[in-house]
Amino acid sequence: MKKSYYKKRIGIDARFILRPLRGIPLYVTRLCQHLPALNPSYLFYLFINRGFEHNDLSANYQARLESLEKHNNIRIINMDDDAEIRWEQIYLPRLVKKYKIDLLHMPANRIYFKSNIPIVVTIHDIMEYFFLSKRYSLKIWSKQKPRNLKMLLYLMRVKFYIQIIYSLGFKKAKKIITVSRHSANDIINVLGIIPKKVEAIYHGVDNEFLVNKVEEFKNRKYVLMLGGDSYQKNPEGAIAAWAKVSQKIKDKYFLKIIGFCGNEKSPLLEALRRHNLLDKVVIKGWLTQKELIENFRKAALFLYLSRYEGFGFPILQAMACGTPVISTNKASLPEVLGDVGFQFDPDNYQEIATAIEKVLTNNQLWDSQFTAGFERARAFTWQLSAQKHMHVYEDVLKDKSCY
Image (cartoon, rainbow, N blue to C red; front, side, top):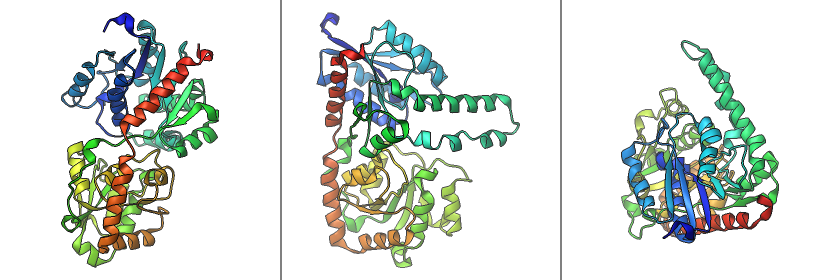
């Protein structure tokens, strides 16, 4: 295909393709894999940064890049830098200008401030903004030994940068994509974005999760939860609920925690110690997607009691694997679950414990949740998500006020 054939050049900030494949990296990767086939007359420039220190091992992401390069209408452009702010505000604008980009999509809660072309931004949620003071608290600096001015200045710089991005930067976007109606409402009401600029587009679920043959209920021997240990992930609540489950159930099913990456002072571990459960659970660290699927398929129940989620990939993945879900009635989680699963206030430990026992002792209920969850998950496809993203690009490009 000759270069002159392409009608428009679409730039995508694709740095997250190089990071461990979960959450935002999974979203960015799947988007870049599906978009090129939807409009062969668009030339897609994927801007990446191999020099960032928190990338995945190159052996893990190289295959993704090679598969993308097989598309005739994709160009992958690398610019190395170890500082995210400098890359976003200096190098990315230079790349956009050099390659004569017509529209830029920044899909990871960031935007660069000065642009002569329309920018589409994906804001997954505004959790970062909600917890800004806590995450970049000066208490972190004060605990450093030895304390140093460099760390203090870094924390102040990052905090100020994020505040400006959310309070002013996002208002410059021509269109904001988000991942749920709940996040859309937060963006409109908290950030003051005009409603017509915000579009909610759900994520998809990978086909690997959607299988016809799964482990039968009688062979599933554990209750699964994830190992996130932040306040919004609510690990203390999940463990407090499990602590209230009868010993009869605990003798038959054990609690398995995967994806744990905290330290000895983790709220998750402290909660296990408080309830005398530390030596009665299985804890695993980071898993590959293949291992994650295997764990979901063999779980009798998935416990996901977050206080806040922009979308909630794990409950969709659990449903796709035929695993019943007990979750909360907070944020976007009811949107993803629909009429499937069980939803509670995240602090109502007794009701959650009662629901755990009910699901694990009622074969008919378990079977109905297996079927309903699987059917619900099938409605979330990356193909549909990419098509809706493409419609956003096309609408923005047609809008003459963008130029």
